[in-house]
Structure formats: C-alpha cells, structure tokens
Image 1 (cartoon, rainbow, N blue to C red):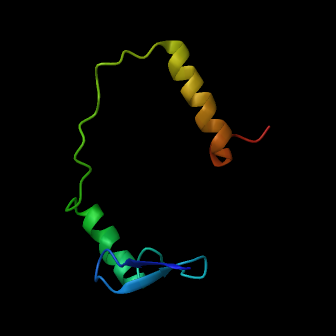
Image 2: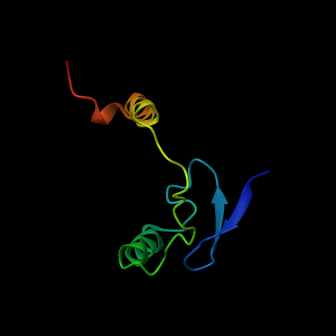
Amino acid sequence: MTLKVPCPQCQTTVLWKETSEFRPFCSKRCQLIDLGEWAEENHKISQKIQTDTVLSEEMLDAMEDEFLLSNKFFVEPE
C-alpha cells in the first residue's frame, strides 16, 4: 500500500514513493514557495539551542571527525 500525504504547501494529495520527484510536495512550484518562506524566515525551528552542555576539545574533535567521514564533499584531496 502506498502512503498518501498532503502537500505541505497546497494540501494536494501526494503519493509517497520513489517516483514522486518532489515529495512531500506535489510540484516544483510548491517546493520553491516553501523554500522561499524559509529564506524569508517565515518558518523557524522553535526549539532553543541547548547551552547547558560544555563541549571539550575532545568532543569537538570527535564531532568534526564524524562529520568529515559522513560528508566526503568537505574532505580535501590527498
């Protein structure tokens, strides 16, 4: 059974499958409208940044290593 979801922009029903190029949006137009709303800061993530955790140098180095391993685009060629 294929999942059906409403387009976040216009509420048109979208089939959630690999061939649905713009999922969860119904079209490129709705996708671009949503992107524009984020760019104009009409949409925001409401959760505040948690600042109570102190990060050590070791923790930062580990996070950087993990990021670089999973994002090969940022690794400089040898």
